[in-house]
Length: 214
Picture: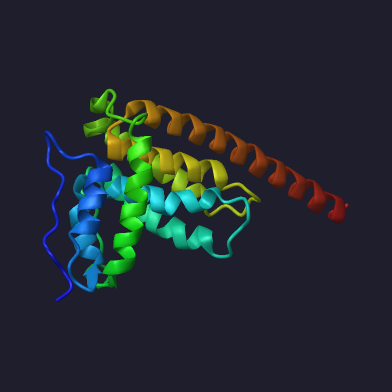
């Protein structure tokens, strides 16, 4: 047996995300738990949590071979779900049945919950209506655009889009429109930088080809 019933976040009066993580970690009694059970336990906060997990590694200053593909494809799948208005993440059955070590998850969940509790003194529900309904779908569309840019082969080009995705994920978790606005602002700067860099590369390539052909 690998699964156990996990508390799904409910509204109103849902627990803080740090408390939910702590509950998931401390409530694990089996040796292994399935990915599907974990996602079900995260409830409506699952999309935000996955955005952070997949977006944050792109902020690393050192390039990780294959990271754009490993994070980009799942992000496309995830952000499409948010844009479509799906309330919780959906994953294929083969992935939902995959299991992870419960002890390792427990340690990670409790460590993250401790740090997150400090962050929640600053990040909290602010104008939550701007992170639900059609504004949430709009955030999904913007995140989808950012996910597409992760495939562009630009040095350090993924840092700002990755940070933006992580902040939008945090905003969806905590229903904090202020954090969402920060994420959008950083994302727009990232898109502008990548557009300028791409245009410069295309222009330089055209000039080089013209020089070679002349």
